[in-house]
Length: 185
Image (cartoon, rainbow, N blue to C red; front, side, top):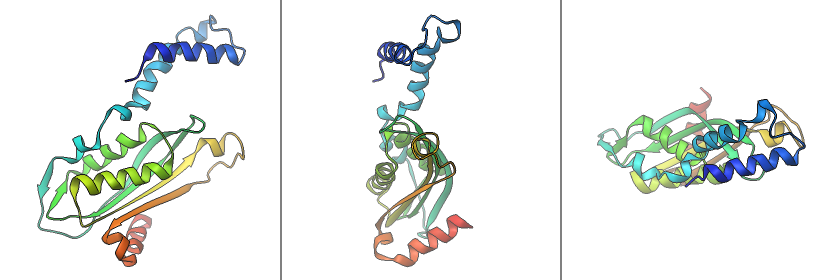
């Protein structure tokens, strides 16, 4: 559970720590605004992907489903700076499918946490495998990390790609290549 009062106190200390006057007109409401923003940004900590992946529909077509270019925003747990990009989810149904919006909601469950991209990729894949029980799943995340672009090495536009394969995607490299070609098309 997010404690808005603690966040407000922490933001005041942070502002004082960088030499700001917390009583300055432009900063008076900043601690409260940040606490409210954190409710949204870190709201995935209180969610369970099972909630979104539990409603399924019968499907005779057992070909691959690909939902691509699912926009996400997350926060790097190392610097508490944003990383953002696109998630691509491919799965081979096992006689049932989930509503397409539920895949995007599943991405949000894990993105809305202090997180690293590598872990998030695996969490999404494992959740889909556990709750949908498909024949296979592949999750690809492509993201730009503000900790790489606005500080440190300062390389704007650089992107990190991670992927996780489970089930048939582990056994058949042709499926993996097919997914990558569909993502790029």
